[in-house]
Image (cartoon, rainbow, N blue to C red; front, side, top):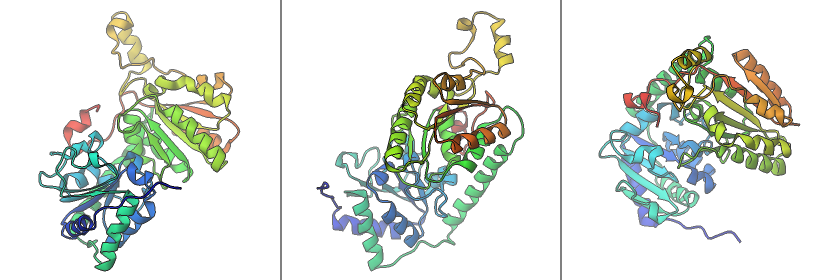
Length: 388
């Protein structure tokens, strides 16, 4: 028998619905707890019935498809900073959500927390309403309130207009970066070409620093429980293990479903020898190593040679710099998989197409990018230069 499903107190649900109705700038945040609870249908109905903007957390992506018209991920900072009522569905106010504190949020923002764990309620902030229970069940309770007394947030509101304008400008900035023809490529060029070819039902595994942060803004998820990343603790080295597990699940439940593992070169270094495991079990994982020759940033080959003129590498090379142009694809070919050394958009498109078409063996694309490439300018200037 399945475990019992817990529901929130009726009075608290009524209060939460009242707070939402009175919001001037509402926002829903959908976390991985909503994915675990199987709340996708109820949450989508709530969003569409009440016309509410929503943001997914990294592993909440796909609970409602990323391309849904009410998803405001492209205006994430603006949405968090100016919302006056935020409903957390299985999402927690840890570092991923900046602990719910200013300056990332309004000082007087009202939080409504939906969570299965009582000890998580009230962490870091004092919520306006707490709803203790299964996220799917509690979402259905909220829907009952809005069914009894129908309510919609106006799509023509100034809040929706603000979010749409910010989304439009951010998307334009990302597309401009993606369209740059210079070589080596930047992150956005790589991810836009990857996004064009990914199957909608694929499992996406991602880890790294800029690779993971920028990748999740471009690579879309359309289904719940189809994304795995470094998670709450930012643990590096889990990517290949996650990909192996996802590939075994896909093999058992849906043969032909693809697993795409997107790794930064430094993240790949933590568990790269799991390529042997992938090849040993012949799991047709497509592994993308986004290689900037370092952790956060590295040096190109010429700069590396110039630097070594000043002394031994142990004395003059920053510890975050890796050997330039390392051929990680040869790790895959050494164990019998397919490896590709990728330097141009055309090579990326061709090698990714070939890898996705071949379901008989794993592939690794070693994708060279500009060593000093970084993300686009952020709303908070200190985020643009921060590596955390």
